[in-house]
Length: 271
Image 1: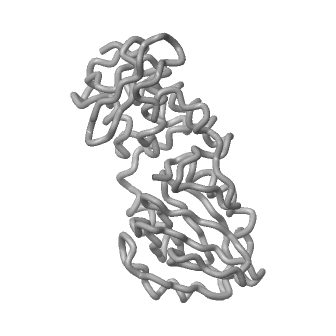
Image 2: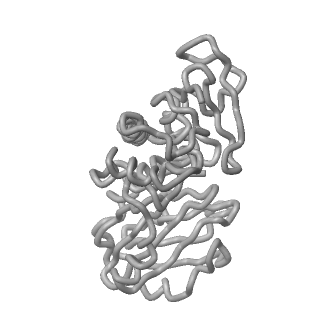
């Protein structure tokens, strides 16, 4: 699943090619994604794209009279190509620009979404329950410590909860907890202030580095230019179950927490 760094890298990839351009055509090839794609999107033809932004794992394309919200789901990806290039099998949505380029959403599993909101108020209402961005000042040690006082769930579940903080998916939660020396199953309300400080710092550093390096190389992800990301080569525990810890001689173990596989080092992350 594309996580926050992958979505941010996608935004960075498509923004220069979309911002300030006019929409020439909207094509909907398969309506049934996570939510049906509405035909009203075709009313955007002739409008200018004002901005491309991101909130959590949502991409927001702002045009003159509406906002298009795109979610990549489990396996989706966006690319900008020449409109003459043949569509791929799972290209479900296409926004053609007057430049002759086309923004295409490819989503084999169809868990993604393309939604339209007519006002910023409608958009904000849709996003209202989301927590702060992990790289913003609003996500800080005091904030996380306050949240953890109320929760007895595993700390990994806590930082993966979009109401607490957005975009910290399984890969980056796993890596951040390892670097902070915190066992993923530790009850959130037992985490100390010092541990919260360390964990917030690690989350920010891991995500920032992943964005800088182009996102994690996963089989379902490629950047907007079609090239894969490069962060996977630096993963310390995720996907390394049964291998030796890079910090010690212990063997990386995996357990299921919140229905997700959680890799950890029993020596570096004691419970």
